[in-house]
Length: 311
Image: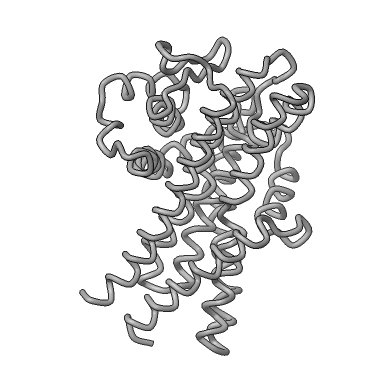
């Protein structure tokens, strides 16, 4: 299989994945590899005599195993037919990225804040792990906007970037890379709490792996809004440093400056303090920017994969 064919099949896989994400949004949990991986995390999430050592083993072995399983399944189909293999790769990649569901959930939460605040608080749980019981409508919209920016990096740009980097070697390896990143992010989201020493290694690994995707997401959001140099501004950089994560603050601080809107997580951080908390129209604009950034990422991915054929 020549390099040109591999890259072409990689582009097909991306198109299939994006098509399925657009049409379906999210596969059923019982056939969702990430959901099944989450069940595995639940099994290992218990008390240990040496939680830090066990945590290191979990962080290093489970994502690799997840990547091997997904890549092997795609490789088997490739061994039968390369076109079917590309389609299979797209189907697996579809389960590793999420754009439509993210945008739809954020939209639903924002709309609920003007009709049923209690329902908005409940729905927010799908986006953010914070306690929403005391949040008013404006703070719920703030949390939704923050989640849109942060989850664009974690749930879409990160896995897609990994696929883009490794697909030129092999589409199967590209899928493995995307699965590896998604697995690390899932471990961090489920175990990466101070109350869980077992998750310390996963959290630190996620900090390393997401360093580039988070900043790339900030750049994409800026381009999508027509202000490509905005992440370089001192205020954005200062706001980005407020969050406990070295990465999450970048897309959040960027979208706060683009709107502009104050994004506030009580007792934790407050971004763009000179602006007001987002109202419905501002939050809706944030969704539009996030969607455009996702589309730009897709176009760049396919352009890069196809462009390599000319090297």
